Image (tube, rainbow, N blue to C red):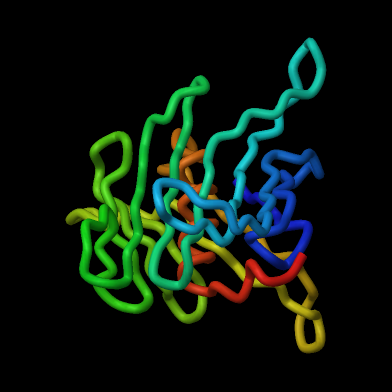
Length: 187
């Protein structure tokens, strides 16, 4: 399954299916609000877009609070309740993500499986962080089409990831915001 990014910016985009149907909306806003003595610089909302018999519905599946280059928090929701929380700290602290190297993130998902986002030749790849190293998803950047055919950037979800698409999309956006904070600067 491929979800193409309408805008070439994971923090401000619409993810569409190969048929052109909008599947997810990702919006980042400047905050400056305070929560529990912490200043939230930006809030990113990940919303699943669905067509139902009653019309189009929007379900917020994730919220990313960006506190600065050193810290962000992802809350993943299911049926309106917080199901999973991921805290990312670059400094020493209580982090639920292992920042083993500059290019990787290891974490345990809501299904108690170990996952890892890793940069492979400029492309982030999510895989099971166990002996199987099963690929779950990968991000492919846009091509301008000067030498080869142009293409939009897309998030490719492999068969092993079909049952956890919300987790993939929300952690992908979180990883990209933490790894490349400049993406939250533009709309």
